[in-house]
Length: 219
Ligand SMILES: Cc1cc2nc3c(=O)[nH]c(=O)nc-3n(C[C@H](O)[C@H](O)[C@H](O)COP(=O)(O)O)c2cc1C
Image 1: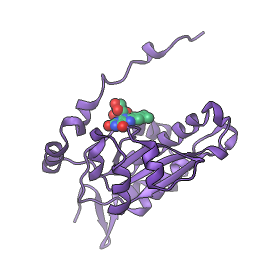
Image 2: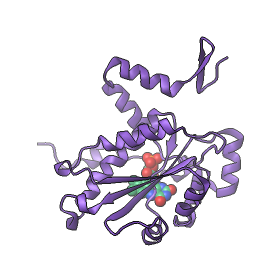
Image 3: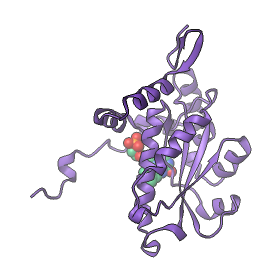
Image 4: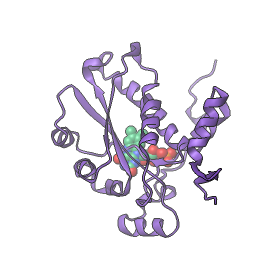
């Protein structure tokens, strides 16, 4: 028996994403073309199939990718808050803006925070760069795991800090809802519930600017 996401070998079911990871580990390195593939494949996914649960191992792999990011003076200012239970997710989603309520369909949410005690030149907000690098690593591992996610900064940070009883030195910067991307009937249902915003093509603001438009100089 074989499905799109799993394969049966000698009577045992294996997740394809897991096998792929094992293969990469066996090779001992990730080839640069795999990295470019993940970069090109990554899209903000806002429509999730709630019936498919993201595993603990997948969440751990995404967090680990974040922890391997570079940071100024190796300060590693990131702190993660993982919400999987309905109760924990609800607390976070309550603080998200009205147009981000599609996050309710996600399997898990990760709040990416900065520990300002542990940040390089915190008063100048340099740690935003470190957190950005951590975020992109995580989003690429989401792709590698065969999952979808969308970074969200439209939320009330003060309300969230209060809800999660965060100490002052922790600054929540991004919420990352994660799940299996919805398709077919499930996608239609999600769309009718939350509107077209969940459809990534509709929410893509003008696609990507070509490199020649972004390049100031090359001497
Ligand atoms: C820091 C940051 C904050 C974002 N906040 C939101 C958000 O609150 N809600 C949302 O739907 N998308 C959010 N996005 C996703 C962007 O809209 C998306 O990255 C952009 O439209 C490009 O599309 P792509 O990610 O599919 O390439 C955010 C992205 C970033 C990097």
